[in-house]
Figure 1 (spheres, one colour):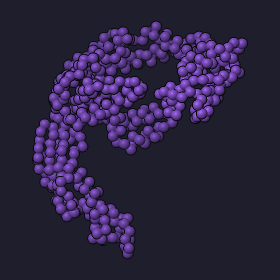
Figure 2: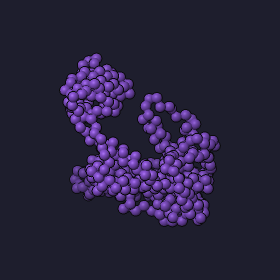
Figure 3: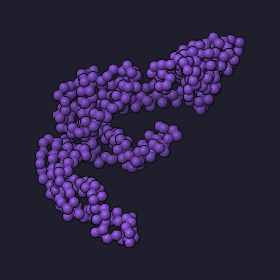
Figure 4: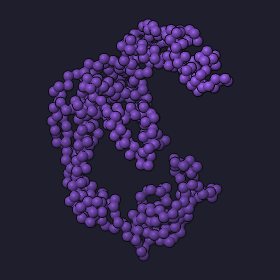
Length: 459
């Protein structure tokens, strides 16, 4: 095999690789042997077909597989020979290839940059901290009580806002009198005034009595999920089976026991503990943000365009999905917005390379056990579909890598913070939990020439 340098500019390298016809022939014969194990030709048992007959019968057919095998093997050897660390999968262009001839192909490779890590010794950071406020604990208990209200039946009066009516309804579209799927239900508990149903539905049930039949007339919103109903008038024949009103919930030992606690003191303690755990998480994220800002500010090097482009496409796809979820009136992304997203992509790639280098220097790794534990956590987010989620990740290495990457990043961050000097600063809960301050996204080496406005966030 011959490897010839064609071009080297910045992080981009071009090579021309020539693989002798004899080496290709060996790969072809190895592939034909695999085919011969199951090939059925008259007069021969599987596995006993002579090579010359296999070549005659299947030689051309296997050349696609042979080309892929040879190119993958030769490109890996070429990069090892030239001591190249690829940032992305190389681009391959086959220039010459035919049976009995040498293979010649060109490789375009974007390499990883050399990253010189700043001195991390004596790094100084400030960790904002806050403790659960008794007033906030009481407010949380009140919300718990409101969400666990007991109901008592209503007698001798009509419904009013705030009541929970148990209803049965059968609906149809008004213009054609057709009943569609999802337009009927039995024994539904509906809090009047909650806004759960189509606009206008709940209002027509107020002032009605138990056992009463009501013809509810509504219009489905134009952006309704079921397209066959969107924007259409409908009639729901509705019966109020019973009426209930919420009773007063007292926050006492009995209430605590209903929630699985020994008494109200234990319930308060659990709420306080949960709130403090949440505040600790915010503190940790604030410190991590400070650290990433410092690392970004103190490292400037060329970054692979391919990695930035892939990161940008991922961010853009996420932002577009969130924008579309906002409804048809959500504003389109401007050119300025897209430039900002490119700068965010550059920052992420740069920080990823810095953290990867620090991790490599300190032999940080994610064990299979840690990855499996994270996979279990991810699967539990989808009750009843755990096996499907696990199978998906196990069959998709790239998806599994998306679970591994944040685990690696957090381990590297924890390693840096372990030796950093961190001073605690007591702040209000509001300051602790608010979004991070904005920062200016500055273009660096290999990046865009225009900076993003200061009032933009990296979300």
